[in-house]
Structures are given as C-alpha cells and as structure tokens.
Amino acid sequence: MNTADLGRRVGVPSTALFTDQYELTMVQAALKAGTADRHSVFEAFTRRLPEGRRYGVVAGTGRVLDAVENFHFDDEMIGFLRQQEIVDEPTLEWLAGYRFSGDIWGYPEGEVYFPGSPILRVEGSFAECVLLETVILSILNHDSAIAAAASRMSAAAGGRRLIEMGARRTHELSAVASARAAYVGGFDATSDLAAGFRWAIPTVGTSAHAFTLLHDSERDAFRAQVDSLGRGTTLLVDTYDVTEAVRAAVEIAGPELGAVRIDSGDLLLVAHRVRQQLDELGATGTKIVVTSDLDEYAIASLAAAPVDAYGVGTQLVTGSGHPTCSMVYKLVARAGSAEPDAPLVPVAKKSLGAKSSVGGRKWAARRTDEHGVAEAEVIGTGPVPAELADRQLLVELVRGGEVVAREPLDAVRERHVAARAGLPMSAIQLSRGEPVIPTEYA
Image 1 (cartoon, helix red, strand yellow):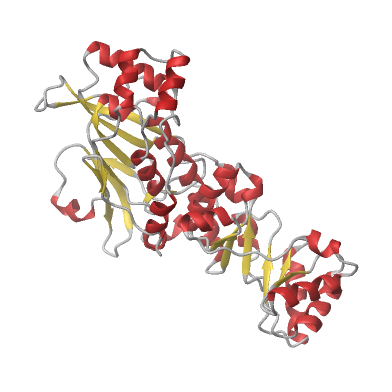
Image 2 (cartoon, one colour):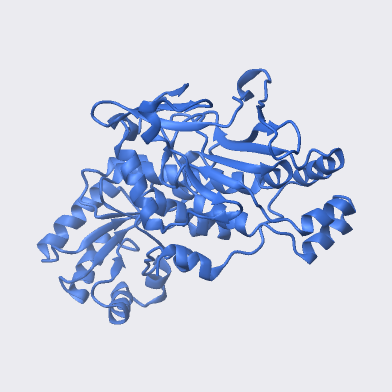
C-alpha cells in the first residue's frame, strides 16, 4: 500500500477551526460589503530564508491537500461559533455550506525554494481563500522547517542511515508531522509508530537504558533481548562500561549481532574503539548506531568515525535552531467586482521596511547553466520567457476544489534528492551563508 492510499484510508478530521478568528470576521465584513465573492489570488512565500540557510525545502504539501479537503464546519463547530458570538447568523449560514471550490498551484513537495518563491498559489473567491490562511501556514512553516533541517543532516550524513527519534521532544501531533517531514528531507526511518501507521514510514526500535536497569545484570538484559528479538537486534552498550558491554553483547548474540548503539560520551573516540573491539571479536558485520542530541554539525564531525547510522531527536523536531520558515500568505491580486469576467488587479502591501511584497499572480522558474546547475530563481507576473518555459516550478494541485496531485512519500523523497543535487555544491556547506542562488524578478 502506498502512502497516498494510507492517507485516504486513515482519514483526517475537520480542519476548519485550525484558523484565526479574524479570518472569520473578515468573511463576515466582506459578505456584508458585497466583496466576498471577488476572485482573488493568494500566495504563500517567505521573504527570507532562516539566517545562514542556503535553501529551503517544500514540505507538508500533502498535508495541506488533506487540510483543504477536510476544511468544513459541522454542526458542533457552528454551534460553538454561535455561542461565542464570533460571527453573525448570515455568516454562520455561509460557513455551514463551505467547501473550497477554487484552484491551488504550488511547488511540488520535496522541491527546494528561495526568498520570494511562490510556494503555494490559492485562487477562488476572497472568502473561501482567506479562510485557509492559518492552516496552510501552520503546516508549511512547520513541515518545511523540519525538512530543511533533515536535508542538512542528510547531506552531512553522506549516505549513512538516519533515524528520526524526536517524538518525546515535541507535541504528540507535531511528532507525527515531524517524522513525515524528516522522511521528505532524507531520513530513512522513524521511531514513532503513529507516523508509521499514518504515512507508511519505516519504523525501528529496540530498547532503552531502562530495560538494562530492569534486569539483575547487563548480560541478563542482553540475553532477554536477543532471545525475544533475535541476533539481528541492536543492543544498547553504554549503560555501564562500554567495553564490557560490547564483549558481553558479542558473546551472547554471536558475530551475527545486528548493531550496537552508543548514546553518550565522546562519540568519535568511542565509535573507533567499539569498531576495533567488534572486529577483534569477529563481529565485523555488526553495525554501530550513535545517538545523543545530534545535529547536522555533530553528524558532520563524525564523518571519519566508523558509524553506520545516526538517531536524531531534539534538534531535528525543532528545526535545528529554526523551528519556522517565516512563510506568509498574502493577497497578490483580486478582481474589481464579483463578475465572472472581471479582470484581476495586482495588489500588494507597501509598508516601510522588510514587509513589503510584490503584487500580481506569479510564475516561477529555475534558470540553469550549461551544466544543468541552478543559477537563479526567476519569478515573474507577465509572459514566461521562452527559454524558461520548460523550467517552470509550479504544478497544479487542486482544480475546482478537487485534489489532483496526491503522490506517495517515496516520490517526494526522490524529488528532493534530485532538487538538491541540482543546486551548486556550496548548497550543502554547513557554514553560514546567503541563499545559494539569487532570486530575480522578471
């Protein structure tokens, strides 16, 4: 079963109250003013990347599609809004019949983005589009932040296995979304069973220090685990003395022992010593897994260590210092009336400072050099230049309210690998820097 099928099978509850109150009060005022039905174009984008980051990663698109599809107000929700006097009765009647009927285009999930990239474009009546602002930004800001951190860690890992282990370090629902975003960004598995169930992400897990402490001796704990889970299990060897634990692990499981996990100490030094000891004991195929509050910098520092896999928790699910992408959702064009053929007029906020934006419905394309390496993110509102026609980035996601672009997560992961590979090599440097390619407006 692919992940798209799984997502439909599990289902998603109504997302209609994942919104800010002012979105509903704007709808009320627009309905009264007769402007609610004006055709409008909203775009989600970020004005800048998090400090020091060289590219962003689009993640959460699949969850956005689920959220839009399941954005409806049931009787209980309408009752709550009525009791709290959030909006008036005509607006409640309008909300009761709400279903998004517009169109959505966006960067495909797993693609990279840069400042100004129109990551998502939502079109329809003003009222139906404005209601989606908070839920779209909530998903994209969170998931893209996690995926960007995961991508940096994946690049630092250099092909070694990565395991997401952050469920206990964040909100229980965020943990599931984080595991999905980490998988998009290059992680191979998660310890979170809800994420495995919801998204068909491979799950892994063996034991904690508590299991060793439960038993009368470390040997008893290892024996119990091997008897239950088999010789291919992973034994945690740093509860007491690592050298003694490795010796006991191989004696009990034999050279067929799957892996040992190191969760403390000088990981570089300990990994070298453990590898030497395993080889001397004949367990040359036994792998070494390291954990212990890793981030991309710690992973990179272990590049020379004989490590086979990394388990990452806190730093991953908090975006490795950047838990949001600062994406915004802005009206960029609207019709002058509610007439079906009314032309669109570009609109934009013109405030002082860094919060101004560019009006107009936008296209985006990535210009490459003669070697196929990206050299600029080109964004425009007029005709697409012929030389960029086959390099446009936005794809159709929703047509007339119907989702048309669901895809399995494995396809998204593959897209991200290809997108990152198409950037200049400096994109994967961990040192702080500017976006790896500039944004140009045509």
